[in-house]
Image (cartoon, rainbow, N blue to C red; front, side, top):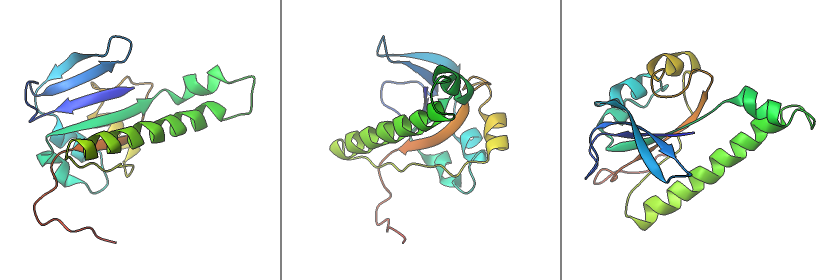
Length: 144
């Protein structure tokens, strides 16, 4: 599931939105600036509070595993991680095409994330990662 956190996006009010792929539409979940709540669920990404937008990737791992119950145990969860990787790759490519930057943030505190995002993602879902979107800070250097 894809949840969009918009804060400083032209033509989009600050809010949390659910992306509906079949309709290619956003549905407003909760108005307001949710960046600090999401940043609180990360291990060390306080800078998210200044990010114009972010994409939250979440999934119901139990449902995914149930869907592949007749096959190898854990296959549904593995497929979810593959899909998250493919989504992230496409977001990276889209961001580069649009002179934006992103990074996959997987350093999440699972307990804290479920607390801060409880109204934004279904309670049965596990947050897989966050893809912040924005313009890199001028003069930003990559650390190795």
